[in-house]
Length: 385
Figure 1: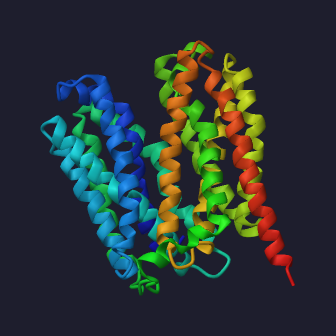
Figure 2 (figure 1 turned 60 degrees about the vertical axis):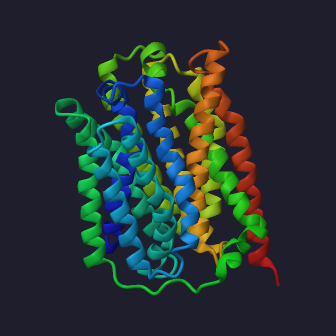
Figure 3 (figure 1 turned 120 degrees about the vertical axis):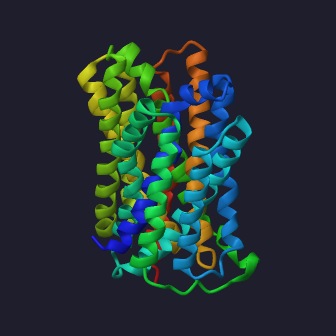
């Protein structure tokens, strides 16, 4: 593995812990800051809001040389999470979480460009998979470890861990990632011109609906496993590690397959598989072994869809490549929020704890249709005289 790619993965590892780790310490944070759990939920929403607001900032930063831009973004991850660790009240932590989310989409958007420049032609999807792999490993190792330290010491430990890895990312990017010229400046209007094409919208649709198909269910994995499959609360630690392992393997496998068969084709195939996996999750939710196996397949599909598309968008976002890449993260985060909310609705309406998995099926169908159309469009382009 190129150490320059490892430098990027270190930062995405920090981003993964920052994004998903808050869920595991939410109760402790609420108690420490004397707020109710609903208010504490705003700390999760603030991060997502930062992602959505921060992505368009790439328009302002488009003239910054790429290595310097990655340094700036990694430094913002460090400062935002250091601020979170030092927060003494609700408002300060809310602001720190918002700042922590600002570089998230930008880092992935600019990182996809950097990955493509660091490797030989045809290896870009694998390079992006390495970068995204930092976030998947965060779910297997980083989040459980940071949660354990927070429970052992203090809730601030999670943010100290994130800040430490972000600082490591700053140093490794400085010394391991070569200097790179910025992309040609197409102006503000030129940054958005790629949105006139249908391919980016098909990619965003594939990300949004494909991810939503799994997150409808994954958002409620704790009660599904403990109340339907009858696992104990203590079992959730290793169950979530298996879920994270699925993310790691799905991301890595999809990256390699995409280099051979094409990004759109691989993501479409994975989304097609989810059309059958999600109903199976619903049917088998009360059985221990099948529920674990299907959870692994679902989380593998979750990151298997996104990685190749994170690279593919660069091809269809000429003039606004970084903005296009950041848009993937906006689609991802909005999808997470919407699907979690809809999953809660079907449970509240009395359809049962496993119902969100069934709800994910039509989302998988829509995501597959979008990506199948993209495959057809690409095929026509390649075979046109």
